[in-house]
Length: 166
Image (cartoon, rainbow, N blue to C red):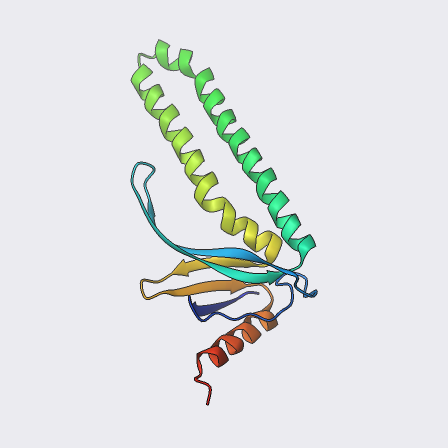
């Protein structure tokens, strides 16, 4: 079960323990909230990085997972490309070589798009227990937390930070 919390981009406060394992936090890790559109040849993005507290082992684990999965993603794109190249004789015999070229471009672009835009939030959710959901035009970022207690404490700390001090 997960909990989604909305944070103003300039007023987010978090408890000083690791977002993943609740150990004492000695560093931060950026979790990105975005909104926009990416059509491969045209894109418009707005984003904000929320610096969440994290311990060094969890940050290192997330970083290595990102490197590994991006390498695997590139290998998958190469596999799709090579698989489509193997189909070239079949399309040539059918007289549909132009269709083959469009298919190879489309599947390669689609694979690259998925690797670039889908992978980071999935890795954040799997290896940190939190992911950025969306960023509104008014500057409100939504984070989805696996740890409900961390989410509720973060929300209350952020609301306390909004109050004027007297």
